[in-house]
Length: 392
Image (cartoon, rainbow, N blue to C red; front, side, top):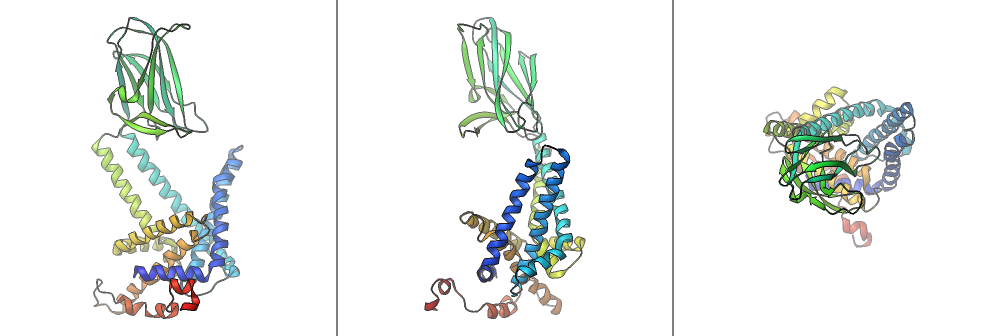
């Protein structure tokens, strides 16, 4: 069944190669507009919001029409660009509805990730000072993630000496150095950096420098790397900075079985939504149901055909990977649409068969009989015959 789905998708794409390439190119331009148009209009908040709505709205309307265009191809028709424009006029409502659904899913995913991260809360990285009594400067190299503000505190033997927030980075993620001056230290003092993160900023620490406070002729300077610190709720990770340099840093770990379980549950829910909603446009196109009933049917199909749903999703991943080598022009996004429509068309034969044969077993579907007509239309085409037609 899956093998025939692959074969039909490939040859349907090949028979409509020009349309596939052109529509892929336009889709790529629209996706690029989703990235760059809001940035270009970021000088004004109203223009920024309008840029987001316009670029994403146009992309989803066009993608929805592309989905239904691929459905026509899957139905063994030969639609042209005029047909595509007619489809786009009819599909804009359901496309925008899917756009709203997609936004809700992103919110759920973001909440899932944020909730997962929020369980860690705080952590400490410490070092026992070995040296002469005196006044020292302590420099902490930390990571600042834009749009978030984790916070740090410096303790000497459990006494708070200094605090700051990581809120310097406005346009990109970066490392910064906090210089804490004139801290009195004596031998065996415990230096503790406490990190409290916000959102996805995991209060990363790279190293600390301890040096005497003299401005000139510093006699003492010690750099304590991440792996040499005494850790509580921190873990050592490899990180690459903007220059692709490998940095060994400390990142807060996740704690709390309740938070981890809740985050895992939300991840599974998100995965089920992704595997179900991949059928949204094929179900809408083939069954022409309302928005609510389309969503309901997608979940029914997923739970009734779990392995098929996973196989279809893996097929999307393979097509996406292959497309990298052709700049996403081929097979591209349109081939993903075609793959889903062909898979849904053949899968719906199962439900037509069960509707007629109510006593039939759901596990013993006569697929060869059900797809016989599609095999006949496709013919005895092979990849070898496509490359060397004179040998067929």
